[in-house]
Amino acid sequence: MSASTARATPPSGANADFAARALMPVKRSLARSPHAERIRFRIEDANADLELPREAVELLATVLSHMAAGRAVSIVPEHAELTTQQAADMLNVSRPFLIGLLDAGEIDYRKVGTHRRIKAQSLLEYQRQDDQKRRAAADEMTALNQEMGLI
Image (cartoon, rainbow, N blue to C red; front, side, top):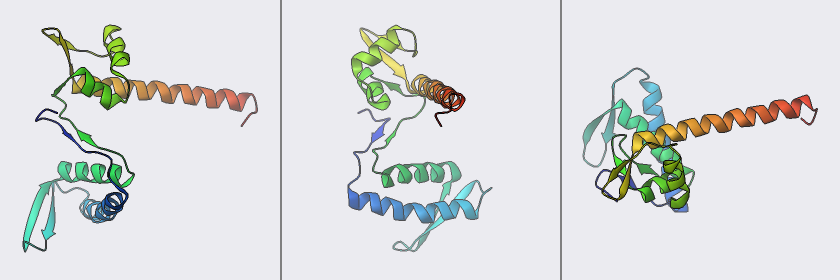
């Protein structure tokens, strides 16, 4: 794992529950200040206030939400370059399958010597496009089922 990525294992049941409880005050803070650029938190043990950028608090809420659902979380800056194994892990596919996507031109990459490097931004764009294709296919199947009276 490079210094530019942070990866967590799936949380245990107790930690998933803890994440779910922690998520509630974070969401309340965001809701209380819907247009604020900074969100303030009170740290009781330190008797201090902590002010964070709204984007950081929204990211924290997303991370806690995934952890509460028992999912592992990876944080990767969009400009980061990933190895083929890191990219395959992010897509939850095998490395050979990912190599096939790269060779087919589905995801942009560059070569460093004999190694492929994938920009996280390219990988995320592929994910967005793939999700859109899946949604369109599901919508089409639903429409066909409705036409045939199966739903």
